[in-house]
Image (tube, rainbow, N blue to C red; front, top):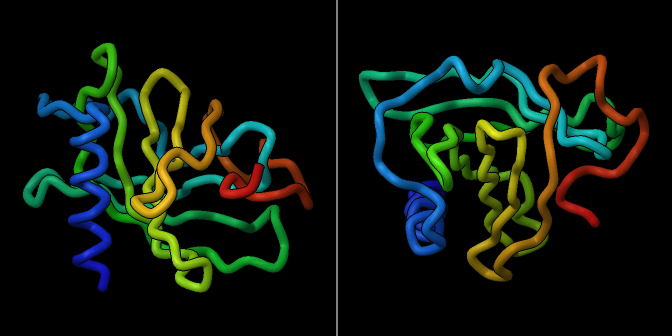
Length: 143
């Protein structure tokens, strides 16, 4: 199931024209971000050059009622306008029947895509998580 979601996520990113092969530049993405105006973020952003993958955790500490979930995607690549970012599949919500892919770009923007429903949400992000999240707010997959 996870392999199917990953393939779907990578295909969706390629079809949308958001990801283009390029040399990684880890210096443009911090190790943790907050989705501005939402209670959630991404922590532990780590690249593995030998495998070309990035791992992270979708953090809901400020949301209440949600469990942190793992994220995985291709290592940072140039995206739209030579910005660096990652396309990470989030397996958080099987109960919704959707596969989520967060495109997090180095220009401090993000897009939430679903293979089943298209673009679900988008916005900006800020560096860090614990200090900048909206306490008790809604997560980024709602709008």
